[in-house]
Image (cartoon, rainbow, N blue to C red; front, side, top):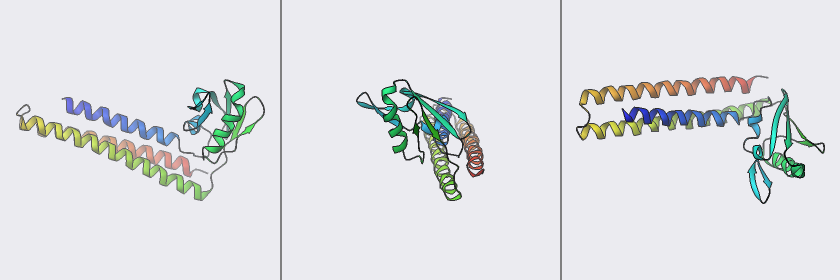
Length: 183
């Protein structure tokens, strides 16, 4: 059924978007995904950091950023500092070292609230996909393209899929929450 396939595709997109949001949330451990939102003023426009530099994680609490073009060192350093991530980059003339400080208790709780907000957005997107699929099934039933028994079966299938994705979101949230609260 096309409604099921479309709903599954939309739910996959919602889950993937939520994963990307979670990757950008600071946990106190260094991760190159922390800098995914950083945009650097380079060559007359704002470019994502990963287009002007490589980001490595040599240690658990250190990121190393190496611009492809050394003339961008200062711009990259400024972009990281201005990104409001609570990071303080240090430029040594060749590379930029970004120590990732441990989070204090209050900041951890803020991060958990942010995670819950992202998870709820994911749940809403999954429910929206279910709603669209159910509308399509109803349209097919009303147009006599789909027998009533099949429509009921499809609606149940969509509900099972929705429950499965909501559970996946809850598991991801729980795992990321534990990672953030870990000292």
